[in-house]
Length: 171
Image (tube, rainbow, N blue to C red; front, top):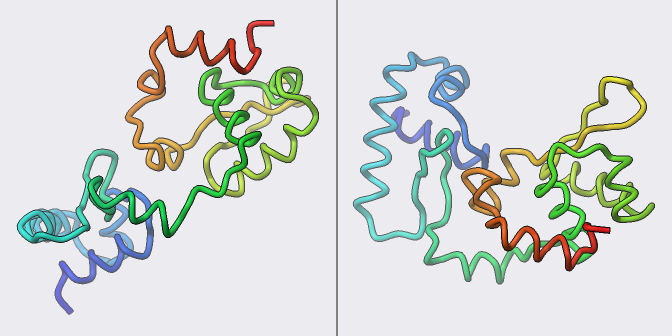
């Protein structure tokens, strides 16, 4: 089996950004060999007129090119209710945020929202120092899914104020 094909299989199956080191470990191959084959694979994908590309911003990931996302969205719509999306927005804007503070802002239904977002891999939850609540924050999958390089890119200050007002966070 060709190393490029084996790397392609790893990228296809993982569905998330992976480092050269991780790929080398999975394939039990030297990292330098993986790097050379990865560059060749990236060149292969960029030279063809296909719908897929390999992005290397935060590790390597096989993904659909932006111009084909409308098709993907029709076939795989986001399965997040408006209420859960609002909860996710609050977490992203105020992260890290204590779950107890989030409950005060969004109500008791937030516990189900948080569990759904954890199950989807969009947020993480860790006990805070006093052990009485959890700190919530977005995950790399959140950034990958919404194509955000950093949370400062999510919204400008003006847009954050407007969104906070809409979600009644300034009370």
